Image (cartoon, rainbow, N blue to C red; front, side, top):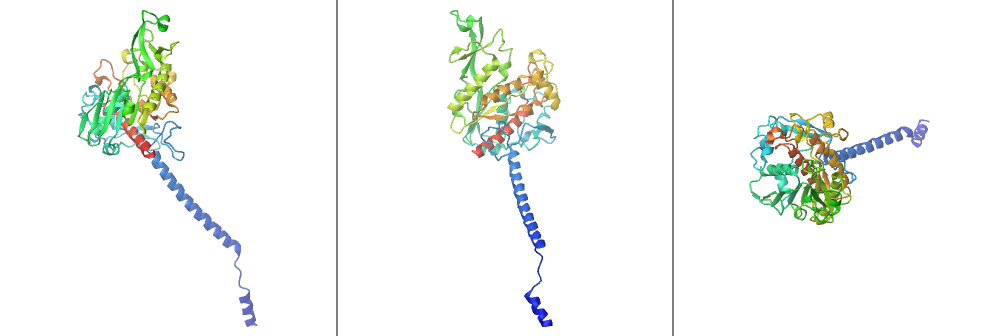
Length: 423
């Protein structure tokens, strides 16, 4: 009987319940899949973050942003005081290219030493100071042109002084039409500044004794602005430079120059006056569109083209010729910025955001990239030469050097690197 029982036991082995085993296998599979998913998600997040730390396109149609890349919004941030910053780490007041009125250290502006110690920190990423030696190596055999008014010269000087600090072999050389220019001989890198106030050609206009369309409307004098003709100082720039940075805006709202009654802007197209006459803001739209068309038609193959947004002024208590001043020694708070620059307030410095509206619309659909420095600069009411500029009035438009235009160049080089290495 015992033997028979043993045989039956061997013929009918004990059965293991299937449900617990199946549940265990399902649990192990889910755990395995979740671990893979977590690793993949972590890897993707890390890759996206590293990209977003160094790039922000301001136009969603910007061709350098692919669908899987998360941009960093460089305009969304704050200024943080860094007491350990040292001037000689970048450049100092001994750089001879600094225009005398902008050299706030030599002019003994009370807060000149603190101005460059404020660092711009975007909320979602970082903007690092660019490496000038690496820049010279990466952009050897390259021509870089700044085209615009004196605020672009402000930026040009900042870049030159930074590069000059690490390279002694520099030769003064001005490409055709340039106001200033230098070549870093060891790297065959040229940077130049082409001065132009309106981008378009303009000059004095007086009524003709023989009459004409404008004379028939009662105009006796003013300034002729040819919306479709580039100013001669930079007509060769687009075919010479590999990288271009444009700006305009400050002169378009300058009643002391273009008085709407005594010396109005009179716009011409195809060598004929535009009738009925158009206002300066409409003229600005036409000029920017024509200039963009000209550059894209004449630029070198593969040229990288930027339009810098408007640099804000900080006149308080009136405009420059009305006793306005800029005596602040600290960056503004966000609510103070809105008081000075909100369009609804129609204040002294209102042209800053007005110009940007026209600029964004005009470059839509072009191959230009936006270099957005406006908001970060709006906060820096402390960074102008003010009374240390040596003028009869406070200079609340240009910037002290060293100063905020150094941060503009950090942003410029960051975007430039992204564009170069993603093409």
